[in-house]
Image 1 (cartoon, helix red, strand yellow):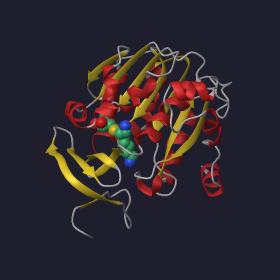
Image 2 (tube, protein in one colour):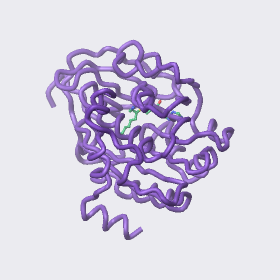
Image 3 (cartoon, protein in one colour):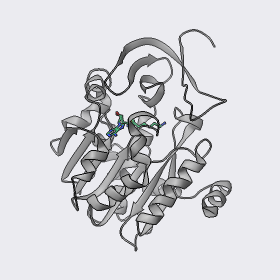
Length: 286
Ligand code: AAT
């Protein structure tokens, strides 16, 4: 490849990969948990990379952050207290704080360095940390969950992929702890991989959530800088009456403008649960 291009390289996705032209390396240091890089790029603006995997880019981060936040928030009747696991760039906190019903946000990020670096180089996401609704803890999401029972209406797991520090956040034990940390009728939403690369992972997490929750489903968004340009979320609800493609809170165009939403809308919410045939068939088999 040409020089000055960053190429994503991960054992999870062999045989094909994504590259981005780099203008400048802004930061490159290992933390206690992972190697952190921040690039300025010609096409996607500032880019955060952890252990060689793109976490978010300035150009398309809103698609992922809005969807992982508003899908579960809009399915819950009264999402007053929300927990975010991961999300060290601040983007999900920024979105969750916009929802009019949310009163209190707790966030648990394992790596203090990601927060620090995001505040310095990615202020358009790190604004999320300025919300007066937010209490931020630096610790492991899995350990935190074990000590919190029946506390949250919605729990969003904005975690890196299941290699490195996030590996425990994809196991059934974690989902059992999530269930225990929810109030009655609570909802969880977890980053759950792509249908083109990780269909077995998607089906595995969905199976776990079907075991643990009254209802579960997979929804997805288009995000060009994630592997294969797509990423999905598994949502689990303790409320058996939830209808995933019917949001409790329907936003008008005015609401969307006021909340500065650029991807999520009530129409996109409904569409996000409509899956391609090969995905539906694969998930039905398991
Ligand atoms: N907002 C989109 C970016 C992410 S960041 C994922 C975050 O999860 C990182 O800040 C990482 O430090 C944090 N994290 C990893 N493991 C844990 C843990 N055990 N407890 C708490 N936080 C953790 C998501 C990118 C998705 C990439 C898809 N390919």
